Length: 153
Image: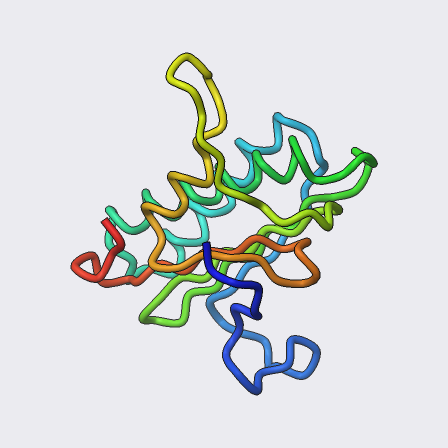
C-alpha cells in the first residue's frame, strides 16, 4: 500500500481550488443500501463526462463500490456520520476518494479461502495504478489512468 500522502496535485489547496468541471462529490448515509447509490453516482458521472473507456469506467465503479462498502462497514462507531465520495476526472486519470469517520487506515488483509468478504482492498490494489490513505487516515483514495494500456492489471 502507498504511504499516507495527499492524492491531490502538489500545491493545490482544496479550499482555494477553482471548481472543476469534471468532479463530483456526494455525502451518503452510512448504510449498506447506499453502496448501490454510490455506484449509480459514479457511473452517471463517468458517462456524463465522456472520454473514459468502458473498461476503465467499469473498474472505477467497482473501486467506488469497494471503498464505500469498507467505509460503511469499518468507518467508525457513529453510523449517523455520512460517507463522503469524491470522483475527479483530469483527462488522463481518475481520482476516487472515500472519506469516513475512522482514523484507522484501510489495510489489505488476507482473506481465507472460505471467507465471503475481505478482498475489497485487494481488488482496489489490483485495479488502480496507485492507492493509499490521507486526511489522517480518514480518506482512502485510488488513482486510475484513463488510458487502458496504463492500467495496473
